[in-house]
Length: 331
View (cartoon, rainbow, N blue to C red):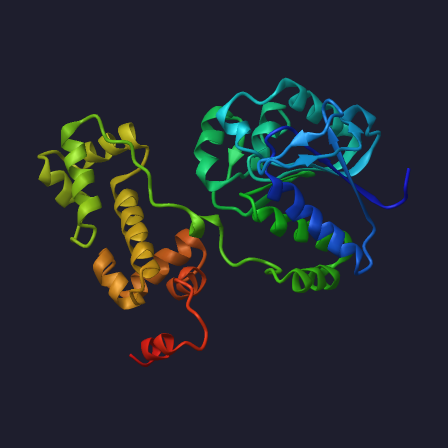
């Protein structure tokens, strides 16, 4: 076997290309600074696979050919959340687990690990869009939906897509130290450690319409006018029930408390206002936070970044040096 730390990517038809090449590029770049990674690719059948972008990815052989590896990486793909995880993939994971020092999943690759049973009783994460599904489908997995990556006793799972790059950098730092990992991050022009969790990237709260008409009227009011001074008491009075009964209705139908729902709607509204160009104070007032400081505390607690930090990351890009931009900044 060629000397070095062997990284084996387990691939399958429909695998997301960036989930493979993002981490692979980090390991390959690390070799330019003195690391010793040897990259390999294997599929359960030993046949090339077709990736999410339609490109065929050659492999070096079957999973059974892998006698041992430092790290096994199972990348993600939409096929892992839209249909049953293939049996040959789960069998491959079970086969490789005792042969590897570390077992890693990228994005929805955590569904393959969970289907293989290796995440039972462990902490794990996945793409924010699928975290609730992972928790429901595999109740023995302790899902951490906001984490960019989670390590639990030699098994490491990451959030969606580009979070695989964050995870790979963390693994490089574990293996070769912070200085080498920092050189890789600078070379690839990425964060050494991205600020905040993955909630800052999430879409607005998706709420299924409540079955109860009274609860639907409450939900519709909060969604339409988040800036009103909503309290559990005022919302309960709106439909003529006690605050405790309203809380039971929210929990039973939406799996969230009324206060948490109001806070999430306001947070989503504030994010949308910041995205569209509003200032922090203006967004705080319009979203119902009352003050910039209250909104800041909520952003930091829920997203891991301040409103100004969020604004810096997600504000609409502007051209440098144009007259319109100069005028806009002057205003």
